[in-house]
Length: 256
Image 1 (spheres, rainbow, N blue to C red):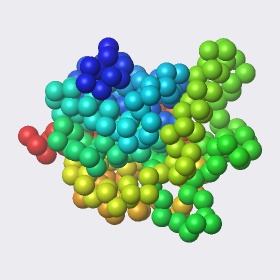
Image 2: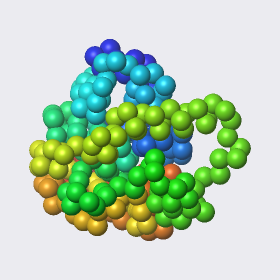
Image 3: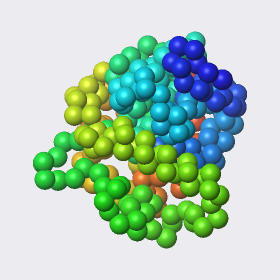
Image 4: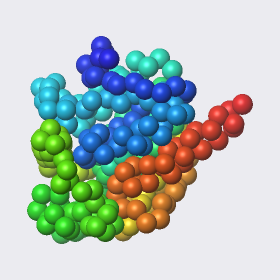
């Protein structure tokens, strides 16, 4: 279905409380098991983000443009939405929530990028485009051997990966994977927040990255999943879906 206010195509599955899932750097290619797990408990809304789908809409020239479109999509649901974002989707979720939490029930940030507070000579994130493929795989999965085997991929799947890489470069090349202002806006997120990271995340290089986020959120629960890297939604799909369900169930219990 197309959300008329945002102009984004939004795919809906499952049943239950409304949840919007914002995908990671590789788009939706590897996240179907996580989405399926969520759909057992939630009505899952998955927006097709321009660029990752191969459609570069000229209305969306920046992460800020995407965030406002997603805010429109959230508001169009017409009911409180649990917003979940992974990696670059976590960045987008944070951008949406700092603009307005009026229509949000909660926010879940999984391995979120989007912030930086480091010396100019220090990297906050592994360079996706300059580092060797094995180095990127090790950073993403904690161990390069845990990366998915692409040998059986169809041409259409390789095209989807290429489109995802192009979209990341378009939206997040400069400044690289962050908004210099976002960290100082995180205090505006007024709904309960779940912050999840993989214990072996080697893509996020800034040692205090997650502490910087957590200490700026008024109500934040943190979870560390062992033996996984940056791609928590791929490597621990079932556990992550359980964490989201447990977190939102606790909120419902408190409100009742």
